[in-house]
Amino acid sequence: HSILILNGPNLNLLGTRQPEVYGTTTLDDIKDLCAEHGKALGVKVAFEQSNHEGVLIDAIHAAKGTHAGVILNAGAYTHTSVALMDAIFSTMLPVIELHLSNVHAREEFRHQSYIAKAAIGIICGFGAAGYPLAMDALLRYLGDAD
Ligand code: DQA
Image (cartoon, rainbow, N blue to C red; front, side, top):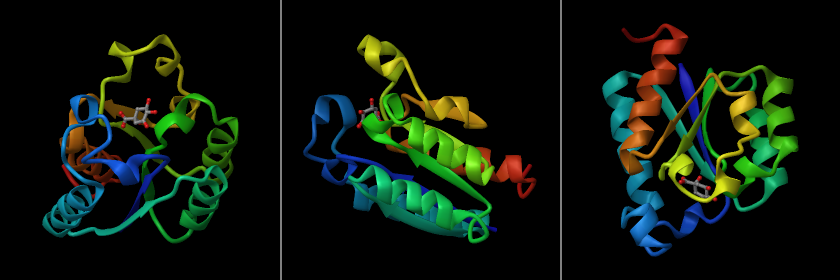
């Protein structure tokens, strides 16, 4: 299997962006962590980031037929983007919603998620460690791991 790990707006600034909320791990560190974990699991990992809603939608469309599933940290688009939700429904790819922070312990507007309506499950609040956790969960869902 091959999986796509897709990151949305402002996540390119991880490491310096509100470290009290998101920690000091950079997106490159997370990419390395995912590549390493992918090797251990025997799965191919593609890792992408965009600040643009349409680019994220294109990436989900392109994942159909290329990847078995997607781990999506949609950043703030989580709380606003009907279009991203529709992209997931349109491809019917298994998607795991991911957040570094525990969005439910934060502002009210972060409690709403359009992604959740189309996702198979959600991991949030574990910081960068959530990425390998999401990979384990996706592989288990796909029947590649036990
Ligand atoms: C986030 C949570 C979102 O509410 C926020 O807009 C982000 C990051 C997280 O990973 O904790 O950009 O998705």
